[in-house]
Image (cartoon, rainbow, N blue to C red; front, side, top):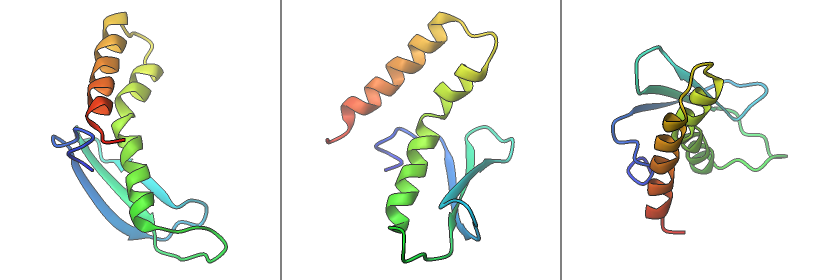
Length: 97
């Protein structure tokens, strides 16, 4: 999935960790394009839990991270949104859906 989402320039690290209120958590350690994704290590039979699906879901968040960061910025040029949108569309076009 990392290749499909054009995240090959990213270092994605997965681990299992105790989360009381979520299935996963995404952290960056300040390094560009380095992401730590911790997945919940507990199984709750009352909720659907598929670790692969959860990991894929979190990778979508990483994929959209650029647009979220731009959206939070005070000083963003229109061309920056357009460039990012083009990148997202190009990746989405390459997906087999």
